[in-house]
Image 1 (cartoon, protein in one colour):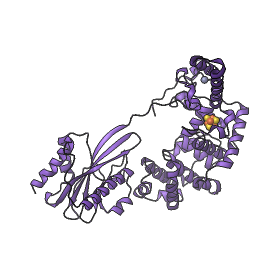
Image 2 (image 1 turned 90 degrees about the horizontal axis):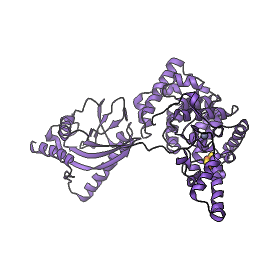
Image 3 (image 1 turned 120 degrees about the vertical axis):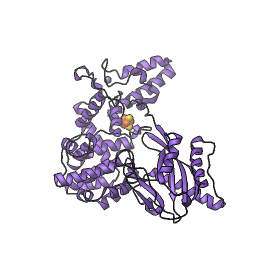
Image 4 (image 1 turned 60 degrees about the horizontal axis):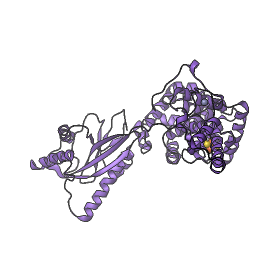
Length: 472
Ligand code: SF4
Ligand SMILES: [Zn+2]
């Protein structure tokens, strides 16, 4: 998220158009909940929240599902949630397992720090709270590591029935469109206002259902690219929709009768949504494009720059097929996961060569062949990594090799062990590239030699390996 700014509250200007009247709040609850009752998707965490009598089991299930759903789609989470809950049905079960096991079950879900935080928090809930979750949003935020305002609101409302709202990306979009909020979503005035609206709107009689309905509406009807306004239950209360309708009507009128210029049409639309001068939540006039209708909201954020990184992967393989895997550091990207040894290409060629040599401290006589296999790419949230994969086949098994101290430990694993261990999807892609390459080699019955000879960095690596062979 970008930089946030807050104005002194006395200087914040917010027009009435961005709020709901009491009557509108009432109508909104009624329409949204009726729609939800008929259209809600059946999801396992919803069933637990609706049928489980033990409040701590409800809180635990909501908490796990909400953490999994952060940055991950429902369809992907379903499988993981079922597996997780059958393995650790209560916070007590989770607290007594190992982080290694938690990472193994989480493997493939991405954003791995979430798994570590869930485990740490479970230990805390059991040790310090005797397995009892706090029930209010504020106490959840205060006492459970990794629980912020959104997750705290979800647990408090869905598991404990507290009348507090939730704001996530879906809710932001729905509210922005319904109340034509076009200011930057990372601006603190906007953030505060969204939470105020969510807290005011939530139905005190069915807070959990109401919050899930808001998110469901954003996920299935008021979607980012193709909102289904025609079938939207809160269409009557949506100003962006009304604005779009006004625009279409004015366009028809101007095309057929008035022959208005596009400038005067723009003026007309702007007049339709007139708010207070200097309002902090309005879309800036210059950013409003009437052709985009409801898509004008929420305002478009500048895309986060994706950093590119090239990593050399060295896959060491024994004759029995076992591969060397190293355990990543305890903190940072992909913490505690197993990976094939990797070296960043940002380092100079000399250091790189030295690293490879130091990496394994292998006796050259045990190396059977060294080959460039191919590239694999994987995009994490803000880093695009290209893995340049090299494979070293050893002549003998159970080689003792060394690795940099940044790794926690190393292990020889079979393909099956690797696929069942705590590893990232990126490493699975690497193995897939290696498998494809091996099959091709087998088929053509020819030995591949080091490739990519015109690449300077790779030449350095080839040189290292070739030099090693001469000395054998
Ligand atoms: S009418 Fe359209 S834009 Fe408005 S809330 Fe419904 S789906 Fe979203
Ligand atoms: Zn305004």
